[in-house]
Amino acid sequence: MRMIGVIGAGSCNDEIYEMARKIGVGIARGGAILVCGGLGGVMEGACRGAYEAGGQTVGILPGPERGHANPYVTIPIVTDLGHARNVLIVRSSDALIAISGGYGTLSEISIALKLRKPVVGLSTWPNIEGIQYMATPEEALDAVLT
Image (cartoon, rainbow, N blue to C red; front, side, top):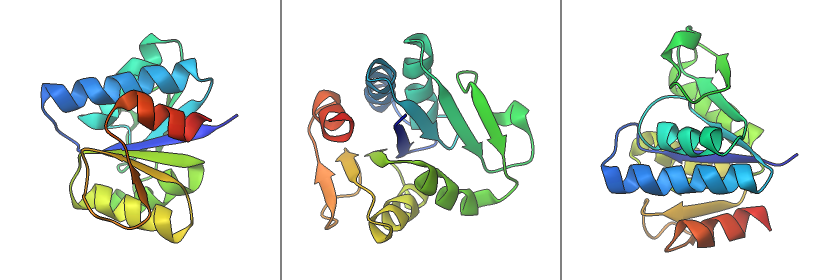
């Protein structure tokens, strides 16, 4: 089964949250498992969409407690690794969708590109060689699920 990573901002506005939610719905309907960092913002939006569409969500958490996962994570994995858990998110994913995000997202993008994993970008870091930039969630989903 394909595992699609969703990486992005830990807090975000409603527009970005909705974009992430649509991505989560599409991942679940596409028969893939969603992998993320398990916290809020983009991660929560994506997990919510997948969860509500009947999909599985894996949250690879930076801390030592399952209770810190957002309520839509069906499989919480505690690491107590902080930002180092970003490597696990990327390694566990067949492809990644980056939505918005700061330096943590940039680190995940860099790791993914270094490992030659496909990265699709939506409203994220611009002008990075190797990212396939898409304008809509539907285009991003087509790129990672086909």
